[in-house]
Length: 144
Image (cartoon, rainbow, N blue to C red; front, side, top):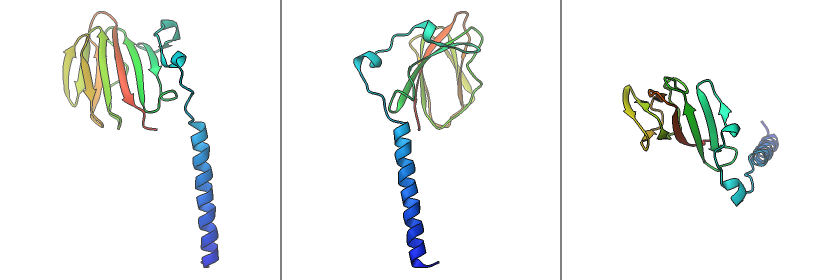
């Protein structure tokens, strides 16, 4: 290939990458943060109904810069999903009810004011093993 053709191709590729990068930044522009949108009070009518209860996002990936905060409410005897793993580490914090934590083949039962840390890529899960709704917070880093 001729040097001039290589140079033109390289410039075209760099221009495309720069344009694409700027478009991506425009699409993921952060919202304007104010005291009004930074204070979030839970309201059940704004929660999303799931197969096993509800979930409410206090801070989702479209609002925060890096971390998310969600509250899950799970009916007795149910779990939001089967044990799984992912790259992001995760924290759970029990507000109400009785949870069974699963981590790497072992389980532990715990109640309110208990936290559960799930390291990156370790199989984990949480299940309501009580007789009342399980209410817990999930804190997770958003890896965009």
